[in-house]
Length: 193
Image (cartoon, rainbow, N blue to C red; front, top):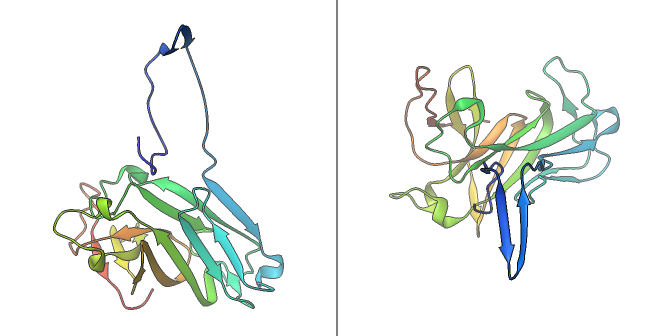
């Protein structure tokens, strides 16, 4: 278990012993709240809004007077950020740094102004052969089966990028080509979001 763990399997019975006390669990259920939502009346921010992921590792900063619209151009009045396991949709995602991705919604919604996305990372999660200068915030394009990287600035232990639409995003490294057969993730540098 590490700070990015969002799912674990327990084998029952689970026995906890401390000193002379013994507790046995035959079943247990807990759901980590993985989503945060924010209401945007009329789909326009009235002031700067910061939407933070439930684990506190990712923020989306919307400038004042940003219009948020869905794929059809209608105002979006409810936005969200959801913490996902790196293997969402049964993807291998070997280019993702760490064990988390962030699903921002509604999927495909776009903004009239750039929104600042900031994702915290741990240097020990960067794959061997890469440095923090090699990491980028990227969005997953399911149709192309590829991660598209955005220009990213590294500030301490945070990757920061301007984004222009909602999609599942993560920190990635490397460049490769995707494969639909294995659903293996790849990255492609993209100067436009």
